[in-house]
Amino acid sequence: MEWSEVMEMKFLEDIPFKIELNEWGNIVMSPATNRHSFFQGAIVNLLNEQKADGAVFPECSIETPKGVKVADVIWGSTQFFREHQLETPYIVAPELCVEIRSPSNAMGELIEKKDLYLAKGAREFWICDDEGSVLFYGHAGRMDSSTLFPGFPVKIAFDVI
Image 1 (cartoon, rainbow, N blue to C red):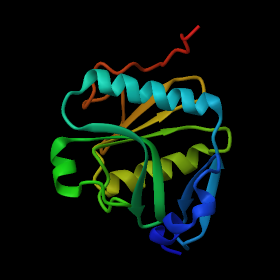
Image 2: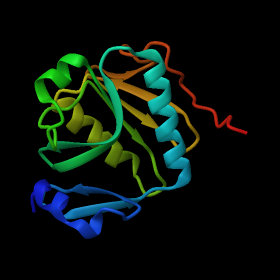
Image 3: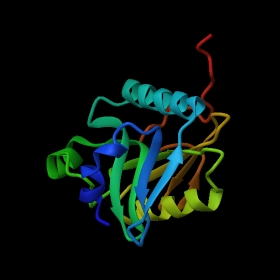
Image 4: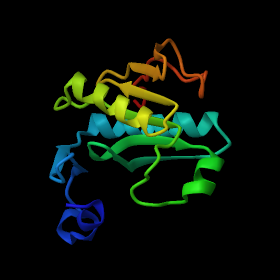
């Protein structure tokens, strides 16, 4: 199955699951929790506060050698969007791809996504765990902080209340 075929399936529009394709063209769905949504929104807000250039948005589809993966949050530079606009899926990854770890995610699965996104052109990959701790990765491996967003916290607090 191709991503364009998935996008045409109207019955998938309102399901509360993240949809991806694996390397064999099979649909893979992951349920989202409110905790996942909170961290996704918090990351979008924090990135928007720190970067004037480019754009930040959730649920971005990226073609990889192992199928279409959907990053929970991305940031792409103005140059990235000049070159790629809003193509679906992106054949090149935006500079930053972020995944929020859900209870259904194995760490190995997220590390594989890291490798896929970095191979497709991402400069950084972040993992936010279900407690809000953020791990930063670049092409040279694990980093103490982001080079793209040096002020980004290593821990996102649930401080809404």
